Length: 469
Image 1: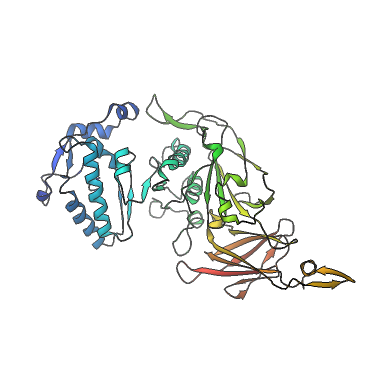
Image 2: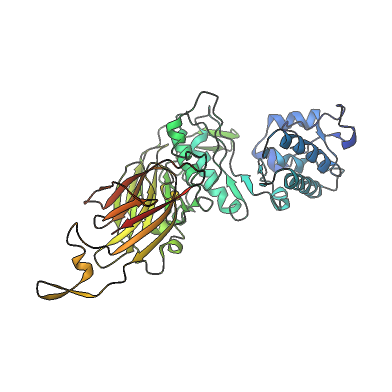
């Protein structure tokens, strides 16, 4: 926890005199030993760990972090925090020691890293979680193990379920991953809808930039979902890693849409006998489930009071755009290590003949995360007009041809660049990006309207999109 080295500090080293450091010997609980014995902990129990005295640990952290900040470091990932629970003897017990260390750590972070730049890691011991008052980001998973084929499916499953608890008071972190890896897309899709930080541990030169561009915008920012990604209600009491029947469904919210990621996580998990993650089914079958708008638990909050329950569903991998009536679900079939991302976009009724929904950047994993705001401006002139000798409403006349008048203008604020999509039941009259008219494609069968948003010149830039219908 102290220096990035599990063995703590070296008490006799030059410069350590004023920290009152001493060797301490971890004592693990029977429950931990029975569930997950660890060769590193066994070694520390014999050889000891260099522990900074709790009354001096703020000075230690502050000196370390001030030096790092002076070198341009803007945050730290503090690993193996749970080891403090094994070192309480002589310091008032594990809770007292843990509280002292956490308060010192957070005070130093606040002084040296203005953005609260700290990721807490290996910290699921209860006294550690409840002692943290300022730390905002907590690792919710075991490590990413690039060379362990058994680890990838259970990684996604465990983070989703851990986030049910951790997501109530911290921002769960899904850990790093490799962008150039057989399971890279699987990991990337989960993080895209996880509402989490996104970072990779690629070797220099070993990168899949095509994959990274689906996660990260040209300015280096990401389309982060609004909440911690958590299992849908019908996934809460199933075992998507072992039961051979269930797909894992994870839901999240964007500012104007919802998203459900579906993952086949079957075939591997923690083995109580071997005390490690192992593959228990070498050929898990192809599974089928279904998704619907109500899987997005809070979709009503972004749909508006006049929403009737219909959505446009954009399936990221298949590219399908489907108009889904209220209460109707659509099937999804996946093999192990496969996924699909379903973006649920509430349909707004512009008039009796025109309906509209915003989808987002079609090539980004978190498609709807690009949309910051949607406003509908209806034309105020709704007077009756004469058509073939009968009184006909102006909205019917406007639906008859390419020269129709505008019924409404939808204005969007959007981040990012690339192919942007919306749904319109009728071909839009005009699309404009920052006041400049742009060409668009319209698919009359699906209602999908797409156009290209250029790369912005400013960081975190928000485009003003205007669509006349």
